[in-house]
Length: 561
Image 1 (cartoon, rainbow, N blue to C red):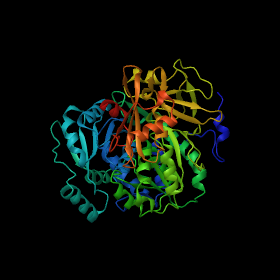
Image 2: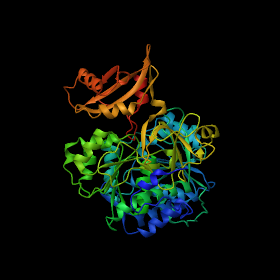
Image 3: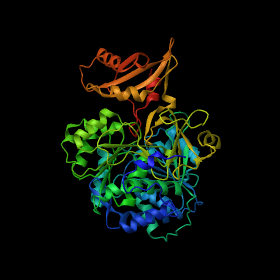
Image 4: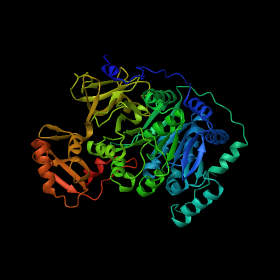
């Protein structure tokens, strides 16, 4: 098939990358640990761990996991925010030959029970702050071994004691829990597991490219949450693809250690691949932000470091760009601001550029694509309004509902083929068949348009499209334009039932100007949209519902309407 995007690649970026360089993700990480042994791998609460430390700790934890006598490929659930233990246990599970099941620590008991039962996890590694949720459901799951981590585990003896005391007794962030020990279940503290493992011999298993590395669960906003099966070769490929795209830019900075802000949660595929795994490959230090919702605390942390790379979603970029203290920071070292996870709005990108001097480079991907499928060039100077070009070794076609390719410039479903595309959904062949085509493309469920140069623009999610009197209205278009109004801080659009038109457009707005009135927004929309696109309903809110990753939850807005 034609690949017009290849001609648009920056100098030094190849059309294809070798994805068989490493036999497994564990092998890639071990290579990174050796090459960057003396560099700082993570910094959390001003405590740093080197790659050498992550190597030693993860090998000990891997040996401890092997002592449990689990079958090869057993699933191990990880339920923690961005703390140093996350980096250790991810590497340990992979090195032991098991499968990582990333779990959102803010899950309700119902959501947690579903994911643990669906994945068949036998081990759960959980920060004690969230153990009470596990307690509620553990008897209904197959979890036989629990590892309890605490905030202070890897912060050094005295700092760790102080942090744990503050978290448990001052801020009271650890609800009381009592995990049952019947039915042969074990509960082990994180540091104890590491200590026990360090006294054992680690046996390197024969892990290959077709073994499962991650069960990365989708958000479940359209139904039951499904586990995307990411093989070792899928994730290795995506790391090497991202490296090929980023390396020409990063090479200009020389061989000095770089710092990436890891504010997005590591249980999410975006931060997992771009921050943790790609960061290890490049020898970057990840500045871990356990609670990005504490904006003042996050800004104080950022003020102590010279940051070079900042992956984020639109809502985080927007919140920081509108924060006066953040605007006073030194951004002279910032060279890449990666936008993903949701559409980056033009107004947000322009504010960010004005504050930091670093343009937002928007990309696109999904849990099912490990995740990166497209990216804008890193040398862009301004907001493009596109998700960029397919990255090396990736093909994208735009297809209609009959699975036929549509002409360039025509809207259709974005379909992706490449070595980073998942093997399927865990134990759901019926769901896999719905999204995988006979010729190997993954049907994303996103509506997009590709231009003659190969740049792709997202129109919207198919499920979010609003049908007004037979006309298609795409929420992203409305949100992008309304977001440019100087009195608007954030906005979101959903479709609501309408007796006459079938559906009508409803707009939710968070004000940045308290004097903003409904009539102001209505007049603005009249100037900018044809009649069927104009919001019939406008509702002001103090805040919009968001997922833990920062995505605006249109589903909740629809339900509330």
